[in-house]
Length: 315
View 1 (tube, rainbow, N blue to C red):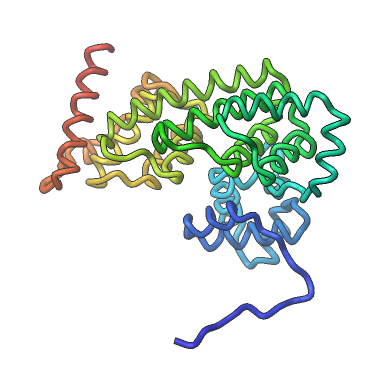
View 2: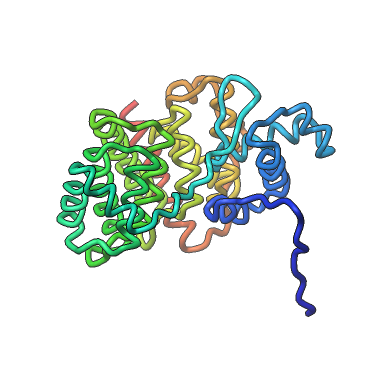
C-alpha cells in the first residue's frame, strides 16, 4: 500500500494529544468534524452557523456537541456558545529561569522538598520543569499542589500496583483537571477529594455489580459513568440502566446505557423511585430473555438478578 501523508498548509491547528486520542477512540465523525470547526473558529461555537458551514442539520450539530461534552472536550452551559477545553500544554521553562525564580520563592523551594518526600525520590530536571509549570502557569497554590501529588500517587498505585511510581505526566494531567474545575484553595481541594472518594466507591461497587473482577474500567467506560454521576445519578440508578441494557441487548453496550440515562435526565428522573414511577420498562422489554448467554454474560446477569432482589427487599 502506497504511503500517504498530509499536505502542509499555511495555518496549523494544535490539537492536544489527549483530545486527539479521545476523538479517535470515539469513532464519531461528526464530533471530530465539529471539534476541528470550533478549534478553527477560535474556541467558540455558533450552532446555527456551524450547521450551515458544515452542511449538517441542527440536530446533527446538537448531537455532536453533546458527544463532545460527554467526552470532556466541550464546556456546556445554558447558552449555545461553548468552547473546547484549553490546550493542555505547559510552557517550556529554561532551567536557569526555574533556578532563579526558585531563589526568589521560598514557597516553591519548600514545595519541591515536600514533593520529593511524598514521592520518595529526587526530582529530575523534566520533573522540576513540570512542577514549576503547575505552580507558575496554572497558578495552583503550593498546599493544593501537595494534596494533588499525594492523591496522584495513591491513585496511580491503586490502578497499576503498589510497586509503581507515579510520573509527572500523570500528575500534570490531573493538575489541568483541577485547574479547569477552578480548585484553587485548600478547602476546595479537600471537598473535591471527598467527591473523588465517593466516586471511587461507586466505581468499585459497580465493578462488582457488572462482574468486572479481572480488570478495571477503561477510560471510555469511566467517562460514561463519570458523566452520569455529574448529571446527578447515583449508584442504584446507574445499576438500573446497566440492568436494562443487558436485558435488552444481551450485553453491556455503553452507548445504549448512555441513551437510557440521558433520556431519564431529560425527563427529570434521577432516583430509583423516580425512574420506577416515570419510566417503567415496557412489557416487551420485560419479556425479553437472554436465550443463549455466554459464560461471562451469565455471570453478569446472575449478579444483576441478585441486585434486583436486594433492591426489592430494601424498597
